[in-house]
Image (cartoon, one colour):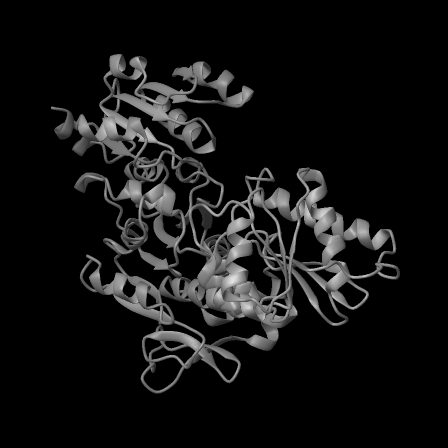
Length: 511
């Protein structure tokens, strides 16, 4: 009877009472799932290797049970609980013993996003319908595009909320009593993999969707590049109105062509070139819409200009692409061009995304610590050709050879960080031997960026740029990409305060 019952659980108002649900993980996502299920009357067991003091205290308060401790195998507590559903936080990979056990036992496996979709009618609009969902994914640019899309929609008069992988659990947005017209949901490949495990009753039907780009990332988690690609492609499944794709990235076009969508859904392309009749693009420095225009066969609507974007620091090519993708989604929901222009005038990028942290002594210092994979770093390098490039960290199983051979050749020098640097050094030796390489060998996390700045200041030239775009995760030496970026900015400011620009001394010696 379990499968039949689960098929009925597609509303907040369904009968969830007594449903045995195991929630894996107790971060923001895990807690939002446990809290939601407890409110619905389910019998909830939370298992997590660790938890904050606050979450650990709140779990019994909401009426759930908690078991803390490392588990390299399936805990007996979980077996004894005999869950009817397992809701896993995105950190649990397909190869995790508990995930394998769940699938082998035929137990329903959900992520928090599927749970949110099933209960999306908790708060409804004036016409009695739940908020529309738009889905955003891609190897890079997800968060920026999610923020942009929400900003454009709000300026256009809709109540819109960014949520998901951006840091606000989708379940929190669904349960917000103020209600929304549109949820702009950023999805990681991990969350999309879990959506791919859904039964028909739990499948999302988004209003619009986009995969911004595709490049190798999270290969250890997914197990292969193909599995990663397949997870990303799931974003287009069941899309009702607009499948937005990157004309400059063939992989995204193929995803749309292969997708099982709702009849009538349109494919909307974007790139930096002249747009076709179903595209958004750039014509003589003007961002133009030929997709949502009555006379799109013969003309285009102006959204804004690259010159205007430059005033807000939004004119880097990859940011312009993000703006076009967000505009495509906003236009599909009826946002007028003038609202898009107004929203972009006040929009600002997050910290650690091509953020200029200082201009001093003829050198521009740029923090793009959020460039945690090669694709993102390549975009930064193209935006700042000739920069002194700070690169390295936890590579997550990704090979930097192609990045170094391509975009890395444009760097004037490379400063390599990371607990393990041999692979990065070797990539430069093989593929960019003319680029001077400097290795930061200090083992003290607090000293890494001070040494980086000392080296970079000694080799950067007047009019040049020092670019932190590591192409790698941060956890080998820092607590997060934001910690890495903050430490970089602090080291730059400290160097400026010491007046080192005037007496930096002799430049360091390259490897």
